[in-house]
Length: 347
Image (cartoon, rainbow, N blue to C red; front, top):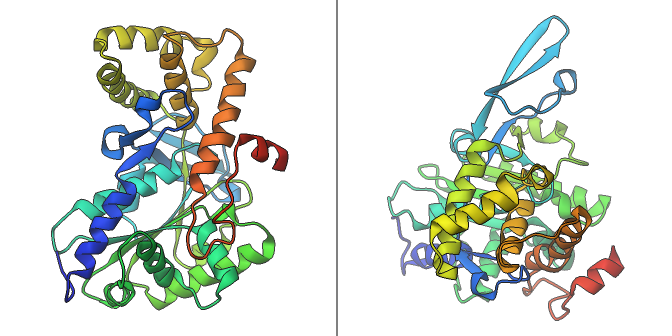
């Protein structure tokens, strides 16, 4: 690991590990499962290159997606998300709510932070909604200053100069992970945010960049011009479902003190072999809610599908969105807490 004088980057990597080593399951109804190691939970996503308007076609769960463009037939391969990002310098990852984009970027930040080879990339993870609020309060804030300020709020002080030196070093590269391009309030803020990102990329072009966004409203033009490759997250297929199931069989067996065989039978009956529920399970967040709800209820799910949807809505509002809101020195709402009731009212 390359260290600056005083070990600033070493301290920074330790901070990144602490920030991203656990996933939060608060609000699901199982207090003993509140925080779990991200390495134990993460399931790699699959992605395909987002088609141009001429190539647009339905998403399929095959080895390749065939899109017809006049007389041409275009094969669009399906890749693992981590493989896609590792092999490209600039990537936009598009996905629907709950499709795993944030967990993917946090996993990459954690994985890069724990690597110790001096050639490994330094990760910089940014929640873009928080960065946008920082811009509104101080226009001089760029991504490097924001990352340094967030780290300082959590005890990792005086690292901005080290981060900028690393970003500017043509012999090394940082992995800049920009999460939630779509989560900024209005058009003016969105344009201001996009321009700030473009300036940063142009200032530090040799680094690698990953941007996540929801599908709706994303305009690829300016990003592809800047050299970004745009990929869409696919829903869980059989491979991801099996991987997810095995991880949660082990996790729930350990937490509940029950044999994996019993957990496996309960979940298979309630979710994985149940066509009434299976259609919800291609979305990672939906599937997590279903599995933990089933465990919290002693191996049963609500009989009515509307009750399942109600629980999903509760978690989206009370846990998932609230967990994305953090307080820092740039946040004018840092002392305001929202619960599900307020989120419903705002919605």
